[in-house]
Length: 101
Image (cartoon, rainbow, N blue to C red; front, side):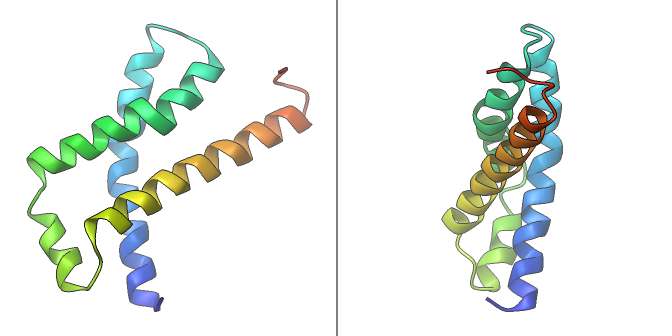
C-alpha cells in the first residue's frame, strides 16, 4: 500500500470517527457504563456512522473508488481501527488498575 492510499484510509476513518463518537456519547447518556461506551463505540456508533455516510455522503465513495479503494475495504479498516483503539485503551486501563474485569 502506498502512502497516498494509507492517507485516504486514515481520512475516511477520521470522517467516520466524529459521527461515531457523537452517537456513542448520546447513547452513553442512557447507560453510563464504561463497558457500554466501548461496545457502543465499536458497534452501535460505528454502524450508525456508516449508515449516515451511506445516506448523506454517498458521493464521497466515488473519490475513493477512483483511487482504487473499495468501499468494503474502507469500512473494514475503520471497524478494525475502532477495535484496536478500544483494545489498547482497555489494556491501559486494566494495567493502571482503573478498570476491573
